[in-house]
Image 1 (cartoon, rainbow, N blue to C red):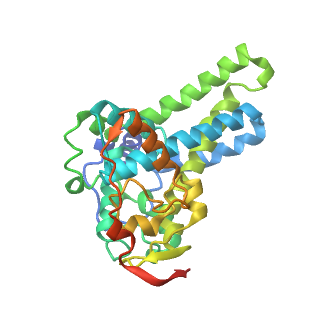
Image 2 (cartoon, rainbow, N blue to C red; image 1 turned 90 degrees about the vertical axis):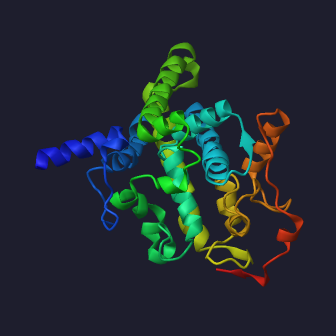
Length: 312
């Protein structure tokens, strides 16, 4: 029985369909299954072994930026909220890019986020800080309870077999991305030795460090953005606007705005609210890659305002 359980956990690292049934009451951390997540954090300590170089830091920053855009603009605003339209090819390419962020597949991601909006900061909200900060930040996805996709929330996405494949084998793309970083470092080492980088350095900085920072900055919207910041709109939850979180998440920190009108492609409602993901989406629309970006109706901008923006 023990060996069978161990084998099942091992298979779940590679094939999510190996988990046939989710225990809807078990909120204990599924330690065996989340070993890869723990190891990713520990591997980051190898920066003290491989060292650093300017090019490794720049690649790590770009790796963070482009994948954060894929998460915020497509995993969130497109797959979760349908804030704009795009072609099936573009949909798949950005789903593929988002998958490199090691935040599982787009259908799983969207299913849990849509459920979050249905029950935001209520008893059924799977990652409300009201249930504890650590739980809201990462405990919710480390347990077996939330491992499977809430298919009833994403029936519109299940019709795409390529998206279902990314969800089922969600570890394949991150592994491929890690090997890409390894190959990039080796190529730079051979042909541009003056850059003082190598394969292992590029792997650690370009994939592991970049991914872990990206994961926790994304998760901070679930946790910190429901605790710290200001409320412009009276919503039925604890969502807050936080300029710092908006900066590091390319616009997601305008969280109270977002909960006030979730289908908007723009979360920084006003010109002074920096929303980098929206600027890039607007640029993509000029080239015809996406279209029908949902705007915030003028009436909604001034509705349900709190008398004076409250601070946490």
